[in-house]
Image (cartoon, rainbow, N blue to C red; front, side):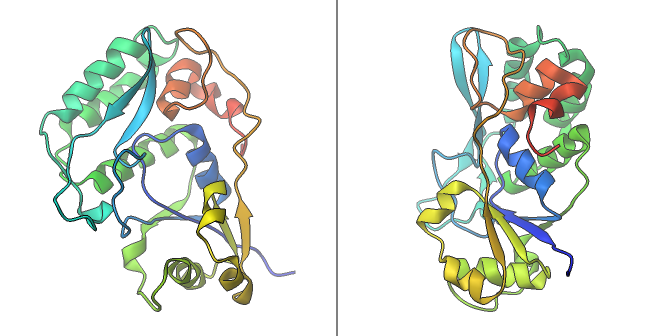
Amino acid sequence: MSMSKKALITQSNYIPWKGYFDAINMADEFVIYDEVQYTKRDWRNRNIIKTPQGSQWLSIPVQVKGNFFQKIKDTKISEKDWGKKHWNTLKQNYARALHFKNFSPIFEEFYLNNQLQYLSEINYELILIICKILGIKIKISYSDSYPILREGQTERLVDICQQLNANVYYTGPAAKNYMNEQLFRDANIQVCYLDYNGYPEYRQLYGNFTHQVSILDLIFNEGSNATKFMKSF
């Protein structure tokens, strides 16, 4: 039987939740799909952390021109000192977490010193840092490094898979609503929908447990045990 090669092709998110990293860990290659339209009030530039007042959004301020079709990769940061603000918020809310001290130097260095101007680059760098902490070794590339062979959303995904020689494509459950699975079948590529149910709870600060938070919540609370509360390890 021929070996399978598994691809994940998805938009970059800001400090994503654990399910995002499970998806990365299950794939052989991860393609950041930031050539698509930037969507407001989404996960591209924000994520959720826990605070004594409950869940709170941590959002990177970005320039969204009147241009409705601005791509994620062209989206620029609109405030120079956003990193300092985010780091102060994280420090304030996670200083009491058991493993915060172990990991704070890595994130403090990034938040206080990075000079990146594009959202996509910031997301990419943070995803790399978190993959290293979790022990995920994977090739990561940007979708715009693969030639566009055909028009169409699903066609583009199939074409990238073929350029990667991938015969398994991982995607979130929401993709069922917009994706044409027949195009994958025609190309002999198996579509695997990720299942985000059944995650175990871990030690978490501030009241009732919630799964819908940034992976930083898990890392600061559980440290090197973080992967024990994920599904792909």
